[in-house]
View (cartoon, rainbow, N blue to C red):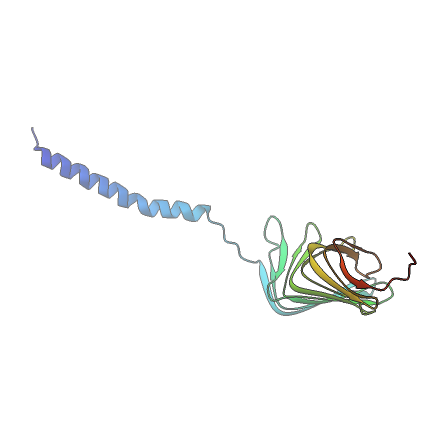
Length: 185
């Protein structure tokens, strides 16, 4: 039983082609198994959330879009179209926060505000920057980005600032600008 060489080559070629194309669909199925979709557990349009503590409003959050990723291992809530927040202290004094984008990380209690972030106190102090973090637990804002701070004493510019939500404690770095001071030199 001596088969010509070309029949053997043809049989091997047919077997190889069949094996190659037969495994392609299996390979695609294996790829799908390892693919996990990154989709929110829920989403909402035109959000208006009121936060309370012992019957007093502590905050109001408004956003045109909210995506809740609480279904992930590291849960977070995203506000891709920005937020408008009003925070209230114990005396019901307000602090207003606006940004083009925000992410709230639930395990850490940190909110990442991005894009034309503007914070205004009820007394008229205004901080503007491109990115700012808010530590909800400590009620503390901070950034390493450039900022502009405006208040009754003047305007200052700098890079890097951290402050309390009521603007009573402010620590700024690399500052320039003209500010009136009550202190005598």
